[in-house]
Length: 339
Ligand SMILES: NC(=O)c1ccc[n+]([C@@H]2O[C@H](COP(=O)([O-])OP(=O)(O)OC[C@H]3O[C@@H](n4cnc5c(N)ncnc54)[C@H](OP(=O)(O)O)[C@@H]3O)[C@@H](O)[C@H]2O)c1
Image (cartoon, rainbow, N blue to C red; front, side, top):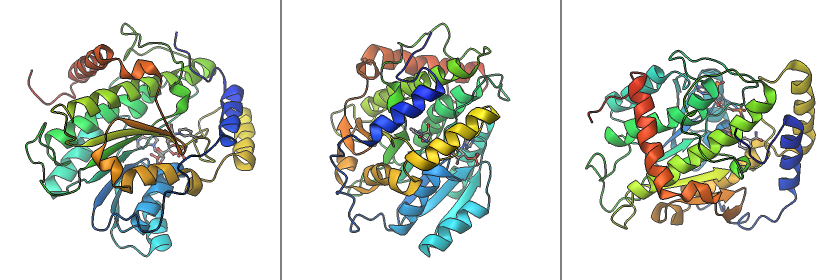
């Protein structure tokens, strides 16, 4: 059984409220001179909430922005273009809960010859009950975790994110590419990875769904730390990998909750939680601030640098997760590489 800081939707909302009143160490660091002119930024989950706000701010700072989502095409892209005056904004359609569509997205980027300088893998859902994907996996597990593993493998092995480790196409003298995972501080205290259960489909209801949300973020963070180790294995950063939690955001994240609960959460979010444009600040900062290209494996909870839950740094668990996710992708026909 997985546990995190969140045990039910009410506690999740209250924990979010508590986070709002803490100290925000780096809040004044995101200055207007931090720009990503001409650099290509791929933002998943960019049709609403935090991802839309991140995409908008990266476009405002000169980025060529590629927005991934299932819906609001072309509306979300037009909104970004309108808000920023940028013409370098495109939308890509992919349902990231379907592993074939993750491959489709990576194929499209590779075939166009895109080079991704900044990946913000932000897409996420909080499903109140189990939902089966096209491959028979749990939709929240795939959207919030396994799709990110597959996308990372594809972008790195294809060299779409230039790197020496997997593709041998690093660009000496250029700023290091970076990969940022939008997670949640709710991962803190989630129980250790259950290797028997991870990736198996089973039914669950609202409370277990809340547990799983936190738990899959713990699993995601463990993957991100392992990826950061593999992308800096000679001691020098090849590609920087970071994790962040935006804190409580007034977004669409509770859209799948049962109607009464969704109404309650929407009202609480509206009144108390931060607007996406404000909550996006730390993710934008990690995407553009020069230091985060030179260092790797860091975590920001809102504007505060912290360590993640210690379990995320366990190197043996990291290796085991790397192999376990490869096995899952293989089992579901989504692994395109040899042994
Ligand atoms: N809201 C919070 O308080 C909070 C707190 C901590 C962390 N977070 C994290 O922040 C991230 C963004 O969430 P949000 O709060 O901004 O929620 P949101 O408004 O619901 O946005 C979620 C985004 O993910 C996309 N998405 C969901 N399922 C997808 C799928 N199968 N394929 C492709 N895209 C998919 C959605 O686009 P489409 O529906 O168009 O596909 C949407 O753009 C998530 O990772 C979440 O866990 C949120």
